[in-house]
Image 1 (cartoon, one colour):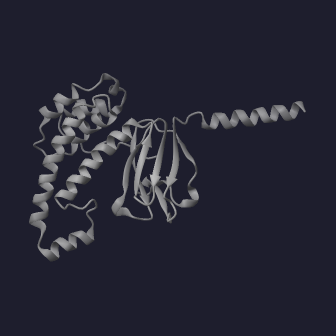
Image 2: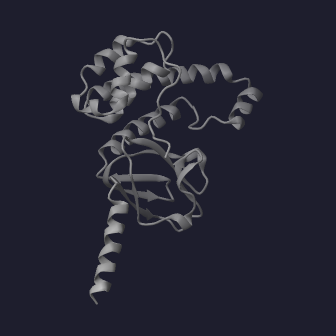
Length: 236
């Protein structure tokens, strides 16, 4: 009996040790899922969930810095749902019928979703598709609509950039705000308004300095554009 107890204790210890490094647990719940045929969570070829058979009630991960992923329901790539995986315990309720999600206990994703809803609304106003693919490109060619399309994109970007910048000024503790500064400095045009990003950067909470991109953003305010930008995700 004593030997059995020792063996069980060893198994429990090994199990707990194996999962002790996880710093993220995401609870997954589906509603209106009568017509759920396929489901994926991932980014490119790096998929956390590849099919319905992989779905469990939760995902446990070692995350580190937050990184972006997307949810795709029933292979509908035109209505993909972006979100962030980050440390902590939180939940996501996925509405299959309406292709929408609700996050519980994830301030970062609720914040990101607010901005995404605004972005999608502006796209609708200016008739800009959520996904630009070869089919839409061919449509613009056949209808000779590239000029109108580019003008609408420029209007959308101008409106949304102002909204997002103001939003970031009211979310100075957010990881998404430091990532906004970093990728804005790197990805924007050669004539990027560094003063705009500098003003925001020096208002950000010092707690964000734990993230590597904080230092990278600070460097980008004073040096030339690097050859490559560090990704938001760790590639694992």
